[in-house]
Picture (cartoon, rainbow, N blue to C red):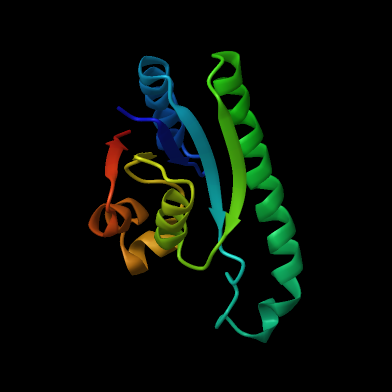
Amino acid sequence: MFEHILVPIDGSSTARQAIDKTLVIAEKFKSTVTLIYVIDPYAFTGVGTDFSYGQAEYLSAATAEAEGAISAATRIFEEHAIPVKGSVVEGPTVYRSILDTAEAINADLVIMGSHGRRGLEKLVLGSVTAQVLSHAHLSVLVVRD
């Protein structure tokens, strides 16, 4: 039923719970899993020149954090012999990056946490999960914390 599952992660506790749910579903349906961690490469755009010198440091730190989260999650799936791929995706709009990836890999299910660690973006733009739900053309399973 679900051949390819996309799991966006961000290091939050709800992302960890989404990983746990994905394990159960992937084992049941013999699914392939793709993990992504989306980082915004333009996080300092419009903030001012005081922050322009921090752009490289931000990208370096964000990429290292993302790679660490992907690596840890990948090990969990590998320990259960579930085929898994993981990657860091750069995109200024997190929900759009998730949906674009889902389409590119031909995923038939997205499993994600109800909320993550993107506090300011959540306040300004609304929940990434809500955006995925409202724009998705595939099944989305939302895991609550």
